[in-house]
Amino acid sequence: MLIKGYEDGPVVAGESLLDRLGFWSNYLPAMCSDGACAERPAPEWFGDDGADADADAMSEVLFDPEHWPAFRVPAEDGPGVVVIYRNLVDDYGTDYLLTHPDRSHAQRIASREGDFSGTGLTWHELVRIADNPSAAAEGVQDTAARLLLLLPLLTDPDLPEAAPTRLTAALTAAGAPQETASTTAEHLLAHLERRSRHDPTWESPLSGGKTAGRPSGQPME
Image (cartoon, helix red, strand yellow):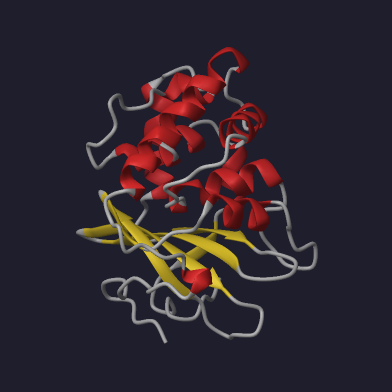
């Protein structure tokens, strides 16, 4: 897979991993790796049985230096997002790229290397992208999976009242237990709200906000 700015990296399509055991219990709890979460989410919160073998097997796939999984979230009528596991040896990270229909290259807006850095999106921007998949473009089409992939980008100090209900539905659709999905949604959103208040100058890149720096070893144009 060729993504401009990542030509030197072995980027591969990762969408087929979304339905495998251990994916969401690897991807979403990573948001809490900055130590700001009151409690780190457990695999059971996302429908896994907690078996180390499943989590370890998925981790090996996601963080393989020879294969960098990319998850494409194209939108029908506006910017989309690509999530890339940048598996450089000794410089692992997850990059979030904004794609524009009228541009030939992606714009890196954020990354996660333990801590989250860069800009993010508002809840309404996340929902707009999640709910408008492009049928003509390769990538994730399921709206629940799209929302969950975008969730780490949420940097919004004022979430609407409907946000927990919408996130709960997405988690349930992805396999989270119905009896605990609402608690999981509230936990994740509470962490993201705390993080969004750390930078009072924050602006969404869709409204002219600044962008993140270049990924190490991967120049962006």
